[in-house]
Length: 91
Image (tube, rainbow, N blue to C red; front, side):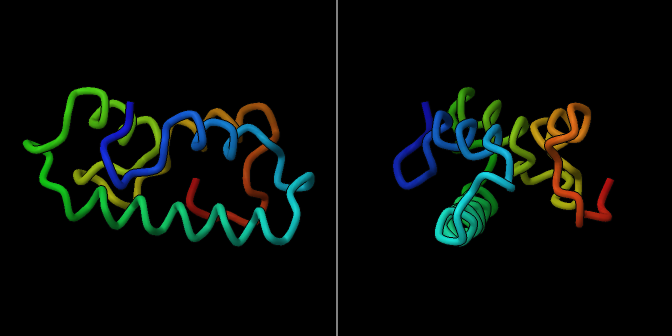
C-alpha cells in the first residue's frame, strides 16, 4: 500500500504494463505528470520515514533515494519482453 499523497502501486503497475503504443496522448501526459510528482515526493520523503511497503515499491519502480539515475526493475522487465521505451538510452 502506498503512503498518502503517493501514486497507488496498482496504478503504477497498470501504467507500466500497458504498451506505450496503445496509450493515448492524454495517457502519456498523465503518466509522465504522475511519475514526476511521485518521484519528487519520493525524493523529499526521508527513507527512515517510509513504510517497508513504500520502500519496496520505490525500489521496484526506481524511485528510491539511493541511485536516482538507475533504471527500475519494472523498466528492466519491460525491456526484457520488448515493451520498454525504445527512445531511452539509459539501459
